[in-house]
Length: 276
Ligand SMILES: Cc1cc2nc3c(=O)[nH]c(=O)nc-3n(C[C@H](O)[C@H](O)[C@H](O)COP(=O)(O)O)c2cc1C
Image (cartoon, protein in one colour):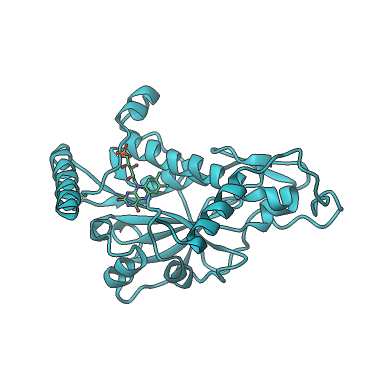
């Protein structure tokens, strides 16, 4: 039986996804004429890495139906490398900017976003990518570049803590982390922004699944992470910008499917043991 304080938190969570667009409220900052926040985070490094835009040679399947029907979470990875063009494709398909609308009013991207607010930033922890050193990188979607944010002296153990001991993820070639900058959406939607943000991140995550399928790679969304460790690693303040989702991406083989099934069998056994 849930305690009173847990019940209260559950009720708060429900209220937050139950909002009614017709509810009376103060005008939003946009309606009050306040200055719009920047469309993206500014680059912080002087040196950047221009990413390839020609993806014609790396696509293994351009059949949307095939990619959708075969989409699944992959948690078993092989030891091959991912190349820079493949990483560039994944970044473009999840957050790439196609055009800018108005006088820097909005970006139109590969993914949709409520009010075209696009409140996310993409970070990649690189372990094994041809042409890139290990470390943390930040994607600059307007110019389709990467900037190096930090090196990780002990990547395996830091990622293990950040991802709450989900060891399978440590073998991935790279790990996507998305942060949210809530004010980009709050400026327009005020207290109603947050449900929209959660819907928005689903599109980003699904596009990573589908884009990975198209390259013959595998990914798995990770909602179970230690947010404060992730924020610290990505150098986020945890208030105006904080981690919202992670997704390792790795090379996979057909044999992995059997290993995936073994992973589920293991979970089933653990559940069985618990109920004994
Ligand atoms: C928002 C979200 C968070 C998730 N978090 C985790 C996670 O922390 N660890 C994990 O192993 N799988 C995680 N998953 C993957 C789900 O377990 C998986 O999608 C589900 O079991 C269905 O399997 P499928 O994706 O292969 O269809 C997450 C999926 C979503 C959409």
